[in-house]
Length: 614
Image (cartoon, rainbow, N blue to C red):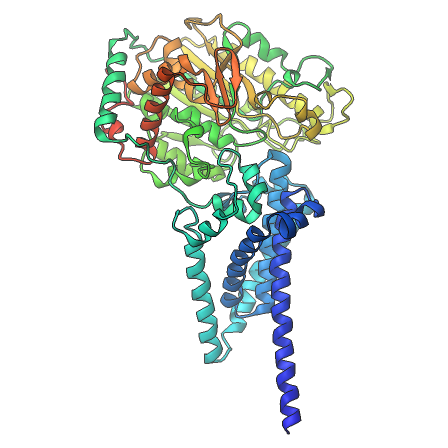
């Protein structure tokens, strides 16, 4: 009897030991998989990171993954089914990270996980087999979740107490982990022992601290650090200074239509070293417009993506460069938490404008429906509510031509002055297979995606020219601001290496006035940032300005364009802030105002810093 009892106990212990070893291998293996997706599936780099260069940080990441695993298994009441669900999550996150690194040269962030419900966009971005795999993983996860939870209800009371204890312990520990950016957080302090954080480059951050370290670093954080001299009195000084400047201007009371057109991935490939295009110039139509008006290049924060961030800058006048590095997407991380935010929308509305946003895609992308409500747009037209929804050949997205027709309809029918903000989709990736006949080809590169992209921007260029011609026929003064949000993420690493960083972040922009009354209409090759568009339009059109716009114009004269690690001044680029004492003062005034609105007490908003004196 004794030998029998010992044998049973040994079997039980062996089973427990095997389960423990299996869990350890699963946790370590899952962290290695995430690291592989960060390192282009280089086993050498991933293993060196884990077991040679950054072992401490790697196992700190494993500890966090163990908490996630504990939460799953206890919630489902099953090690087996919890392991499956955990594995599906890791595969999904890792795959998304690999694809984002491939196309946008940046890793996945915690806030990106909210995009998991964007089935339409995911289907457009990935090929058939990957999308099918994604759907299968989601379906399997839901099936496992339901079946395992139902099955777990039959466990004994003792097992339920153990399960509840593990669940609550894991949950509370993960809540604590979610405050990773609190300097007092013990996990953050453990990382700080050996971590080299790179706030200005999240790609390097993930590379230096591992996928888990970089992911944790991008958990919730205040939008901006509090400037040392932030106070109500200091904000009042800034408001008074620039509001007086605005009031002293003899701006016109005219209220022309203002049209913003943010064109998806519109850029000039001919500006890149290593690109030769046969078949003509894809941007020939664009150039016929740009060469006769105020135009040049716009500095984009990102390469290959980041549309919503450029849109945020263009509408608000605030710069992404001033935010904490973890504030990666204000549209999903900041604005939904605000009741209102001052912008070109609120500025024009207070002057009697009717405001409309048009995006020929679904309303949930980047939470645009919620964000546009907070901005205060009167109307939001999407793919379901637009009248014109035609496409070109096999391109799945609504064409630019159709989107422009939507704009023209509103301009012709409305009696009030219009501010219309259009975000196009025609030139969105993926590019391969959009068009059967391709007029343009990338010589020597044998890239169908590039050839399709050239055709895409040629169609976009032609649609813009026709739109401008139609706008020129309107009786009411109408000003069009057109720009590309970023370069497409389809250029090879080899081709990228042949170009300066700034070149990969410069897109085309122009400002067109159908009455030909811009003050600097003869200036081309201008370098600017999107947060200067609003004040530039008001200055070029001779309209009354706000105090905030005067601050932006003062800064623009000193620093014409900047983003993190890219500063343009006196015709030259610098990676560091090359500011004089006077320039630093204006920059810090701007920083104080942005902090005041996005993080602080909004003193400047209450003092009407963002409105135009009637």
